[in-house]
Length: 140
Image (tube, rainbow, N blue to C red):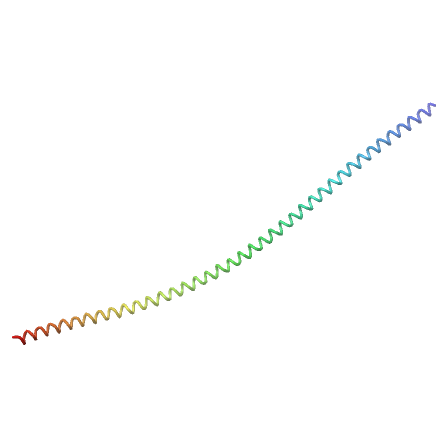
């Protein structure tokens, strides 16, 4: 009977230990399951974040390319406008030089004609004086 009691105690102890092992296994399985779920959620979150980051990077790359293209276009436009301005300035300088030459020519002609008018006025005055002298002589 002592042996039977010890056998019963041993069986009870084995049963208690098996229950503890089963509880520990269940707890371990719950923790493993929780950790696996957390890992999957974290991986999903990281995957979504990575996809969002890729989208943002691609959008920024597209914007950068558009800005580079716009910059090149504007640089070409600026260069064209600068060339047009230079050409226009050269044309205006030529026109101004031509007008200045014409003005100098006309000024020379005007001076020549003013000299001729002065000479003719002198001749007229001289002729009038001669006529007055002749008339005065004739009247005497």
